Length: 501
Image (cartoon, rainbow, N blue to C red; front, side, top):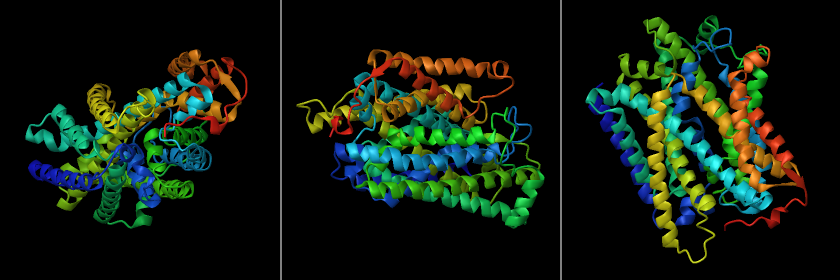
């Protein structure tokens, strides 16, 4: 298919997004940007969050992992990633029944305000900064993957370089998020999730049809090649099932329940009951969607074997979809699904980072005498600055790409979300107060210690390899260090927390 035609389709897609942004951002204000005026429909948020959680990383990298050989795994990965997904599912219940009630009781706009009232201002700023670091790295890693695919398989043939592709895409994201914020994103994410899931189902159906297989035959063929292997029972393996499940649960608690981007959408729902409905319904659909992505991965490898294609990993899906002479509608579905996968992640992250920096670091909602217009001006400056930071991170990831970015994403989460998880756990589970001046030192020391441990884990731990449980180890070490710098005292009551309303 002509690259010009594909580019034209992308432009049409963005025109639709801009139309939605224009319509939903009418009469918007800072409350609309930060929390959607607390008027979002729970079912709309739940459906849109699927696209945010899956992202381009899932769309490209998860199918590619099925046929990969992972170090220490004793064979190909197969469906090992679904072990993490089971953990995700468990973690969402903790978010729904522990964290959401806390956020609604305190009427928070930024969830990190809880840390200010419970542990103090330095702990609050530290938690917010770790979120900013974590979400910036995670979102730009996902964004980089999709830009790489678009550049390699579509825009390179037109002479458009990677750098220009990245600049254009970030510019387009800015166009439809800078006014409406969460109020706009709730609707654009719903549209993009719909396109992504439709593309997934169509691609699965087409490949099964082209291989002349029904579902049972497909499953049998994948079993024969080891693609359906789910549980890894080797304790020393980095993908041992118990490590993966526990790691997945804590990843969800940290990357969803303690993440301003994800919670910003949840607390935009008018009441706690509906927000819980959103979280529970969302987690069941997300599990099903991840399973279908792994099924697609097995099908892609079967198709590649049948056609003599030797590509593996992140490049497998785009190679088959764009360069294998498939019907026009399959390439179109892949393209729309791909760009629909990346933008719910990138646009939400950009909005959440802007919100957190403005509220938590700059404190614009607490500054007396600061008008609505002045707050908006500051917000726009921060929003544009984060877009530039995104661009710089995308260029950096281009230099360290190893071919399977989903593994890098989980490792990054383990290092950066650990201290954030520990701070919230310490505040919720203990009645002790910390010496705030030492909190930043603790939150930096623990990840560094975990990094050193990860480098020598097999040598120091008798062949044991640390996997997704890195997040748990990091959080536990941070929690222990917080205990050491704490003292007994009256826990700050929830009603004492000063929120920024």
